Amino acid sequence: MDGLFWLLLIPAGIIGIVILVFIYYYNRIRVLSNRIDNAWSQIDVQLKKRADLVPNLVETVMGYMKHEKDAIKMVTDAREKMMKAGDNRSKLKADHELAGALKTIFALAENYPNLKASENFKLLQEQLEGVESKVAYSRQFYNDSVLEFNNLITTIPGTWFAGSRKEREYFEIGEEERKPVKVEF
Image (cartoon, rainbow, N blue to C red; front, side, top):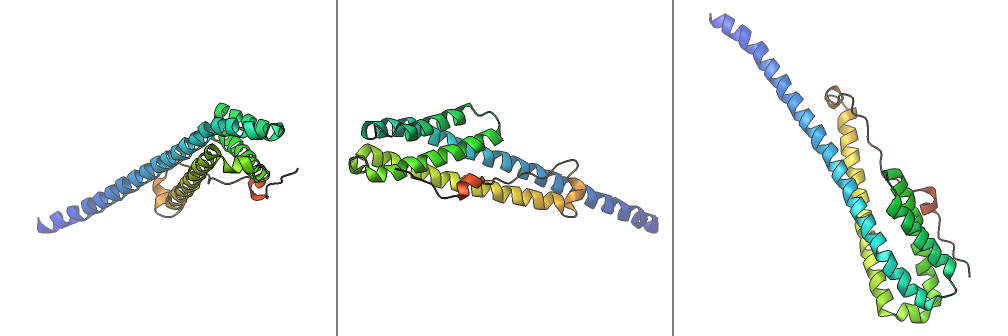
């Protein structure tokens, strides 16, 4: 009887360990997947916050730069695209356009001393810089979460437990973002 007990206990222990490992990896994969979704939501929140600041910026700038209508229109159009974007890819594309348009406005502001001295403009610029920092942090957190998730589901033993889960895509900036802003007067 004693030998039979051990003979049954060893396979039961192995099965128990396999079940515990399966539960651990299943839960870990779910947690990381949820973290990625949350990280994307945080990026989305910051992009919305930036888009909400743009009308105030445009209103302030319009009073000083009446003849720079193209730059103002570029910002307004980019914001509108961002607000209408439905999926993540189109939001990212619109975000890149808006970031470029805002850089142009701030570069043009260098030629308008009264605008640079305006308290409203300074405040809006500071708020936008704060949002930009939060967007950058949110992007970094998203990419770190994607890295951890992708590493887990593509390495052994995680790949055995990942099922049909696919690797997530990293947040990458577009080619336009890598180029310096061109300002023409």
